[in-house]
Every structure is written in structure tokens, then in C-alpha cells.
Length: 498
Figure 1 (tube, one colour):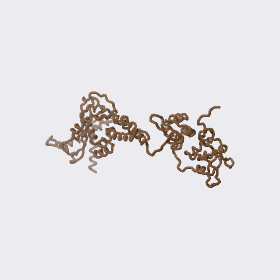
Figure 2 (figure 1 turned 135 degrees about the horizontal axis):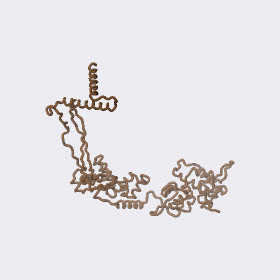
Figure 3 (figure 1 turned 90 degrees about the horizontal axis):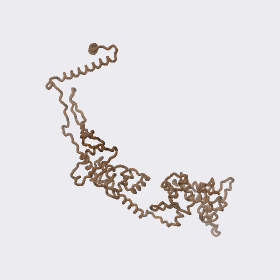
Figure 4 (figure 1 turned 45 degrees about the vertical axis):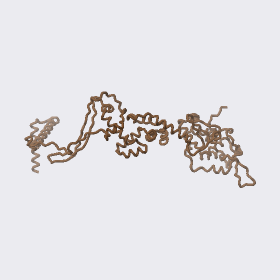
């Protein structure tokens, strides 16, 4: 006969894999309670009131009633806890409870039928392959242990799709306190049920985490953090990317923080917190502590804010922020050619800087003198010849700013930015003088009349040219001019009469 496949369900009423009677280890249905596993003692004639009443498992007396085994298994499914799994395993060990002369305490049966009000939501499994794996583990819980690799191989054999880490996490969460996980560095984790592992390994529960494991973790993070290369003589702006920031952070520290706050995913928050902790360990600046300090100082200009955040380990010191600003300002002013190449400019196009400011303006018009505001614009174009080549990489910043020494930083003074040339002329700029008869020999009224006549003549020329293009019987210029003059004269006369 062919061997039955492991995990095959033989009966329709069994929710888990059926096991042979020989696999039920050290359980006697004739002497032990089906629910609690304790011995079913006979009644003591001397103390009949102390007897824990025992009942034999039989079919219900009502016609066509389901067998007692089916009723118990239904309670097991409703409870879905460690006790129910234990009872279900015993029920699947035999074909018929009444034939096996199974018995139980009435007290235990009444307690088992009471479904807990607070059901454990984590115990429900929606993965069929994982459920089959759990069933097999409960079947062999008293005879073996498993490694995480073995469990994942069985899980994949049942058709599971999760990774080993995901499967192992869900499995341990589901089993809870029923199992013990033994972790050894460099080896796969070992899983076993507590009742079996306690027979081969002495287990001592403590309230605190083993200090040796904590010390080993601290040493590992410290070694990784202090082993990251650091150059104190320059600011490399190419390091301020997500990939470089992640690369220059302790991998163990980043993984630990990501698991604590982001379920293992590296986010902006987990990366920033990891770098802040690393700054406290090494006392060397990094992308987060320097970038955050410079950004906050640029936005708020508050030295007290930087001091407070530095005391709590989130940013570099205020002196380091000023040193970065001074170093950047000096580099931009001294290395214009390199800056132009970083901006993608060629030899034929120089960099253009613009400044804008508003000022009060007095305007003299025929209707009087008026005061208004105007916008002044100043542009500065650098000579294009300072750029020697145009080998640029758009979108990639490789700018390296030399870090000023303490002596150089003091010699710069308070210049934390490129100095700008401010306009120092009069606040109110007078408009140009209007031509008068004293300067040009022509009166202002005559100048206005000439301008009005010129505008009227241009409008009349435009109308005549439009008539030539659009009308079939267009007049020649003199006739069109006379017609327009008569029309204007009639309009003037009508206006005077009205």
C-alpha cells in the first residue's frame, strides 16, 4: 500500500492533519481526562463530596445527533487557543472516543465549553500553507525541534509564498508562549515547544534582557560607527544623498532603529535618528547633524535654537554651522570657474547674477507731479572665458568645499555669505527735466500739439490702407482725406449744436 502523505486530512470533520494512535505519546484515554490530562480518580467512599465527577465519552442520546468527537472538535475550532489545540490533537489520535473508552471530568468539560471573551486575533492564520505547517508541528511537538530553514522548506513544500523571515515571524507570533526560540549567532534559529525543550534544555525566565547580548550589540554598533571614513578638512556635497547617507551609517544601528519605528523599512526618520545617535557616539559630523543645523540656521537665524538642538545631540555645534557657511561663501567667491561648471555653463555663456529692489519714484506729468514705486534691476555677467571646459554631469553634485581652519575662520570675520554691492545713491530719484522754450525754443503746448497731430496722421494713413485692401471701390488718398475731414467737421458741428 502506498504511504500516506504527511499532512493529509483523512476525515471530513478533522480540521488538522490526522495522526496515528501510536503517535499519541503517554496519553491513556482510559485513565486520563480528555480535557485536562489529569488522572480520572474513582469515587472515594469515605469522602464522596470530594470526588471530581467523571463521565464516559458516548454518543448523544438524541437520534441522528453528531458524535461527541465532532462536538469537541467544534469547541476546539471556536476557542482556537493552546488548550483547544491540545484537546484536538488527542481527539485526532483515535477514530472513536467511545470505542477508546475515553473519559473526562465534568468540571473540565464545562470550563472548556466557555469560549473566552477576549479571543486572540493574532492566532488566526489566513495562509493555508502556514496552517498546515502549524498542524504538523503540533503533531510532533513532543518528539522533535526544528530550525527556521527546515520550517521554511516545509512551508514552501505546502505551497507557501512568504520569505523565510516573514514566515518565521508570523509563525512565532501565532504560537506565542507555546514555543521557545533558541538563537545562536551565525546559525539558524531553533524552534521547539516549551514542554519538550524544557526536558532537554534548562530554561530560566528572567525579567530583563541578557546583559551580555546588550553589550555585544553595543560593541558592534560602536565598532561600525567609528570605522566609517571621515575627512575633517572638507565638506563633500556629493555625500548629501540618500544612498551615501545610508552607506555612511552603522548598518546594525540603522537596522535596529528601522525595526523599532518603521517595521524594518529604512525611512527618512529612521535614517535621521540613526545618524543623530551615531554623532553622539563618534562626535563627528554627518549628513543629518550638519545639514539640519545649516538649514535651521538659514531659515530662522537663531543661534539659541542650534545650541539647544546641539545639546540634545540632533545637530552640530553653532560654531560648526558658521564654519560651513564661511567656507562655502569663500569657496564660491574664489572658485567661480568651478561653480560655473557645476551649473552646467559653457565657455560662451557666463553666469548671470541679478539683484532686485524697489524704490520711491517721483513722476512729473501734464496732470501734475505724482509719487509712485518702481523696481530697480541690476544684472552682473561674468566673462565667459573663465571656463576652460564644459564637462558637466547634470543632476550630480560633486562639489567639494575646503573646510576653513580655526585661524582662517576667525580671519574671515562675520562674513557668512557673499557680500553684495548695495545702492548708496539718493532714496528718491528725480525724473528727467521736461523740455521747455528756454532750453529748446519750443513751448510745451506746441510739443504736445505736434505729437497729437502725428498720432492722428498715422491713424488716418492706417485707415486708408485698410480701405484699399478691403473695399472694391476704394478712393484715392485725397478723396479719402476730404471725406474724413468733412465727416469730422459734421461731427463737431453736431456736438456744438447739442
